Image (tube, rainbow, N blue to C red; front, side, top):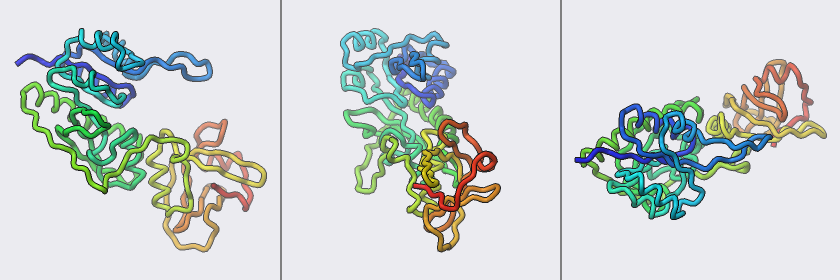
Length: 315
């Protein structure tokens, strides 16, 4: 049987870990496809993707198409003569691309498919209070994250875990899943399972300003899960309003204390050491937060430099 000739497609740090595992395993990566460079920061200097940085350091052939149907890109991709393509956190591929290799194109998705198809599966699993997630490899078809599944690996989600720590654990699990999938393909031992469509599927919607804003009229556990599900990036946020002053703040860490009370929901309550926000069924003790133009700070550090009135509230 001929040996594997792998094209890897991906962009962020999560994808780098998988590509690194493939390279370190001694497999032949004939080329890498990643996002085009984008201007970033105040100086709007071109920023390379994490995958590009790694590919350049390893001397791997690299393509950065803006149009995945561009004939020049297709020709360059064909010239690499890959027999399998691996996709991790990239873009939706046109059929002309995913049908190219003889043994197919498979994707690693950071959820237990068919649950949490979409752009942000790690975040939404925590936001929705799941206690288990995992990774799945599947052959790409003409829809998003719907192809026949090759294998999946599960892991528990800790009750206090945030997206940052779960991301890192799933990347390690993803390395195992991709290497095992490539081994099955090389041995001609791939058996796939179709994804079953049900009315109970949950979607990993793209994150935006609106769905990252906290609603303190929800129960405390829901708000707490949203905070940890969006930490450390893109981060849950809310408005803090004190008289004529309004700040849009980010909240990175909190603790939910469930207890009955008769206080106004949304009240921002402070002591010398603590910041508490009143929710319907208790209090959120804010541990780490960030005010506009300031660094990320603990509640104690904020209180050392700021004072709030008894009328202060959040929205």
